Length: 102
Image (cartoon, rainbow, N blue to C red; front, side, top):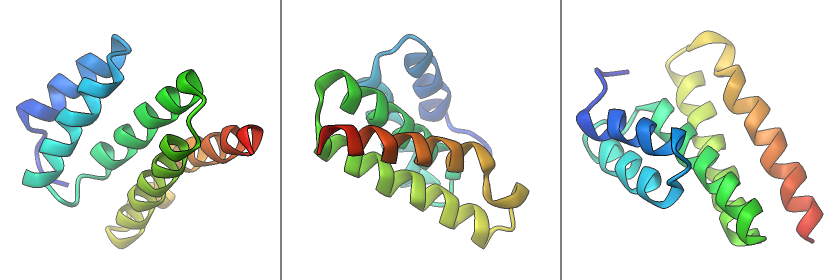
């Protein structure tokens, strides 16, 4: 993983303040510069999970699941910390939340 960009750092700030749409946009910008930044993939999935729950939107939750799976895949490719356990926890959570909406 490369050094965090300004967009990534700003995205973390917005995520902490629950400005999910803005955080997603910034993490997506970071991914354009750092396609293997598993933290950005994870944080997009995390923000989408919160939004999906808030809006009761199954499509946001499905997208969250895809991004969390992508973060895990990148982690596995990079042999990163047992496949990025926090992403696995959040993936399980997103799947559970999606199941509530079906």
